[in-house]
Image: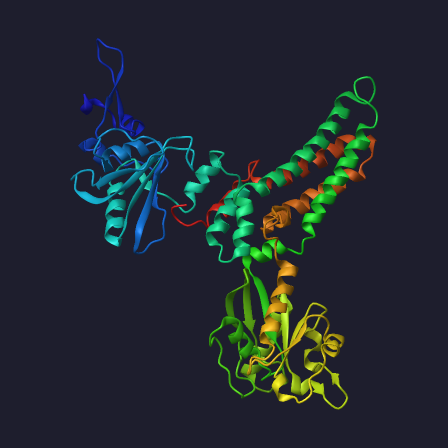
Length: 512
């Protein structure tokens, strides 16, 4: 019978079932063994191999590694790879002790644990099998090789498990982004802001905005269909306008958040600048708590940008130590100075380090800023007056704040005098400017990705356009509201946004 089955029918029935037509019986299904020479010669395309697998834990030696299999043939993988004492089909969502074997040779590859998640109650909403094995390189390689020998399985692409969860309705795009950010979170602030999205809190807020716009649109559409009179009460258009104004105010409030969400997610850029030999590299070493930069008494030691990623009291901070700013004929130093100016102008926070002995006149009790730095100083610039140990009479805090503002401190990085107070107040200032609340979800910024901001800006513009129309142009106004609802819907992926999906999932690690 098998010899009469065409190659095409085999390709169609790759899942293991072959349709047989007996002259005296109705068509029945026969189990088709993967060991058959016909099956082993059959090459299926990736589109036909619906079951995917990947290592879901980081590569390297550890106690346990998890290999995840998802798709319609996950249970078939259990039957040929997993051997338990009961020899029965797995009980869903229950971890079982087992042996992992190679299908053809029945060679035992490892002793481990296996758990089967029955669709749709799984991460991907498909049948999912997880193999918990020892995390040795040879063991992982042998199990992955065993999976590759199964003709209905293929390796997962980056982010494919999460993409299937999205397509199955388990997650929306904001939760997908939050999951990725949660995996990549290095600081407490990043964890907290990513967790809000992964838990669906951001999704609920965006959906609330979208439904509000749809409510406005429904009122306008009702006016178009029925008009005011016996069927509709008066003032419906005014109600729609008032609701639109309220929604637009909420959207503008989210947009005017100082980009806190994006900054916390990607890292706060802090630029240290000042004249040569003021103590900039010493400050970098102090913040890093190690000798990250070369420190010498020779002016111009630092000639290029030196960046470090630090966790400052839960905030992700990318600190840049720059070349000393001065007039010079040295070509290499000039290039470094130009780069330093660009870094300072593009940073989120700039910290100017000055030598107190060079800017403080003890006789007149006056403080001044070097002329070469004035074009880089703004109202948001912070100041550290270093080398306080080199002056006999120090300026008062009132004099310092009068000359440099509230965010100015005096210390000696050489002796350590005043460094604790400086670090404490500087950290507090950063947290007040960029930090989220410790426990209140409402304090966490809603916008964490550039595309969120872009779509909300478009929605706000469409609502503004709607508000420009009068009741006589209600049909045009309805279109503006429809575009606004679609713009917000793109954030969560509630409409067709294939190009957005590709951008979201391509940066995921394999196995997630």
